[in-house]
Length: 218
Image 1 (cartoon, helix red, strand yellow):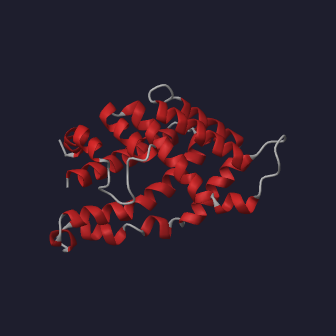
Image 2 (cartoon, one colour):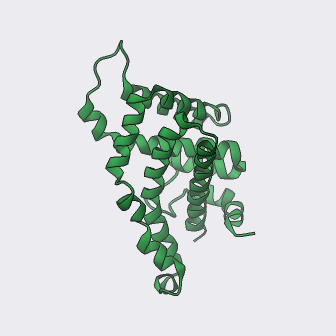
C-alpha cells in the first residue's frame, strides 16, 4: 500500500505542478509556450486521470464506490475531459500542428526543458532525447522529407514523452529533491511497471514516507 500511495502522490504532484505552470503561462500571455504545452498537458493528464482515480477508489474498497463518497463521482466523470473537450488523437494531432506550424512553440518548449539541465544526468539525457524527437518531427531543409503517416502514427508516444519530460523538469525546479528524484527514476529511468504501485522497492524504502506525508492535507 505504501508503494501505491507513493505512486499516486507522485502522479498528483506532477499533474498539479504542470497545471500551475500552464496557468502561469496563460496569465503571463506566454502564447508561444502555452500553445504547445497546454495541448501536451491536456492529453497526458486526461489519459492519467481515469486509471489514477480507479486506483484511488480501489484503495478504499467498497467505501470508494458508494455514492456518498466523492470518488464514485470522480471515477464516473474522469473520462469527460478527453471525450468532451477533445479525444486523445485530436489533441495529439494538435501537438503536431503546433510543432510543425509554429516554430516559436518548439523553441520556447525546448527552452523550458533546458532550465532543468544539470540537476540529474538521467533527466539531461531525457531532455536531449525529447528535443531531438520534436526536431525530427518538424524536419529540416538538410534532412530527408518527414513521412507524415509515420509522424501521426507515433504522435501519442511523442506527446507522452513531451509530457513526462516536462513534468520531470518542473518537479526538479520546484519540488523537493525526494519528489523529483523519485519521479525521474520511475517515469524516465524505468523503475516502474505498467500499473500504479509498481515502483521499485528500493525507491519506496528510500522515499515513501516523505512523499506520502507531503501529499496529506495540511
